[in-house]
Length: 139
Image 1 (cartoon, rainbow, N blue to C red):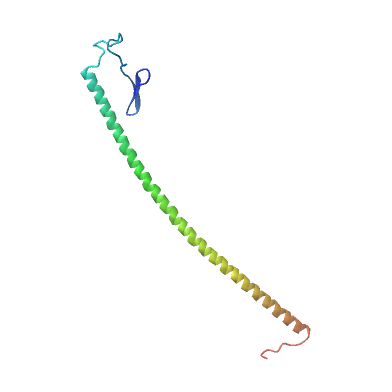
Image 2: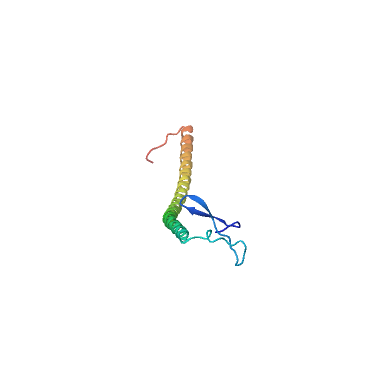
């Protein structure tokens, strides 16, 4: 692409090269280049070869970029599948923990009732002992 001053940047492999492009001119202009300044057929062939080489390099880079993008898509899909599996597992485990919490709460209530019953039994036994009576076993 020509800049304002007729200079453009051509990328070949890894280092940019500055290439001077001819300035546009009109017929009858006093700035018309001399015949020796005009591009020869050999110059044009060399420039065409450089452009074709650049296109080959860029084509290889685009292919590499496409492969990398495809690989990233596969990895992203795998990560999404993993996250979905983790969400399902977490949901199942949450459901199980909720059930266990309910069971523990129920067992806590039962244990509380058992403790109350044992206390009542101990109180009655202590009252009998205090009255001097012997508990009769088997009656």
